[in-house]
Length: 388
Image 1 (cartoon, rainbow, N blue to C red):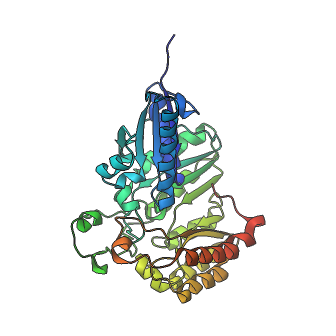
Image 2: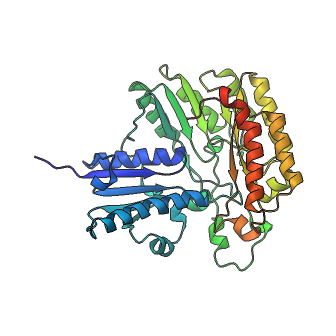
Image 3: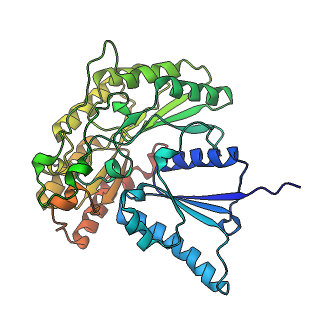
């Protein structure tokens, strides 16, 4: 009788992390492993990490603490499983991770997990499909360009073939994933900001890359629009969603496609992060509140039934009461259907951590969070769109 080895995957973070874990599961099952829902029974435990905020990293540490506690409580039970760390926390130096998490046996960069084997998806109706990885935007608060690297788009043919196989096997809903999906196919090759930052005694705004539109010249349509049009041809596909989308590279051609292509979900999530132009500048977001308002007006004009969600950070370094009130005013103007409101958490290694002092007391951050949460989300509890 053949005894199969068992794997367990603990996933923290966003939809991109969930999609990565589905790919990792596919790799394990391709090698003959079977999944277990109990990590204590596993031969290999994979921890897929998030690093967007300190609380996310703390949850990883907490999970490892539970494993260590289990081993200690079992009369110094000998460790019988291998623990593998992957995901966004790998932006930390290996020495730092080894010091913080001595139980880890192996570090697996997510870039080493390819698309050679089918992902293992438990949802048989809806599927996440990654179309790009990494980010070129370098918002000052964000760790993603350091944890996931520069933006790299998957070949369009590969994405289309994956979606076709999913539709042929019965999937009706697809969510296209990327750190900025609407810049799909438009990435530029350049020197990593991280390399410029390491070893520098001083760091200033002029060291930041421009976060304006990456719109490149092409003959007809932006690649993301062409991708959506291609997969829309599959008859069995009923709903197309995409995330994350940002104001830059949200071209008029994409707005027009959303307006006329009813397979695209009428709920569109577009991160704003702040309603203050001063804060947006410190964040290196590359647009103004006026740009954002114009974008939403264009979407509403394309189809009055389109609803919008967003991401917001409160308590960014230097955020004054006036700047916060500008964000609150924007919330009242746009009337988002859902808003993911986050309290600023400094991420070591980011530009904001080098440029700005985390000078907003937590009690004020929490107060601002509560005000926006009430304004955006509590008004819409009975009418919130589906966010997969």
